Length: 174
Image (tube, rainbow, N blue to C red; front, top):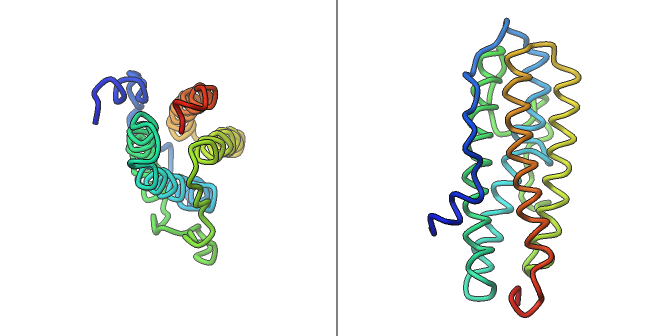
């Protein structure tokens, strides 16, 4: 991966230490939506990996590399959320807390054109930001909220990247 792309898609801000004020299975259940719910980190990672594969030889390499790089950042979010879920007393399975609303890969947005991939990424990043903002309002644990605020900064950065890519002239997007 181009080191320039890697430096562009990652913020140089540190992540807070993963800790909690106290165990709270209800908070763990709430975080499971951001972890592996249909709008969570797991389906986002899968969508970005898919997009990076179908763009090979069909789109600018920059889009493919950017999708891969941002997928790695989303994997870090997935890992942190999983650890917090476990620390709070939950089970970090790749499904939501009720075990019935797990990721259904048939429902992933399998977009193949650059414009569709970028539009889907923008919509997904906006939904992620809103989800994390709602979690911050609902979870009364200062340490968990600190992690969520840091994740929001990444999501806002990803939104900015994808938004800028949306305006690349068509001949360069192919």
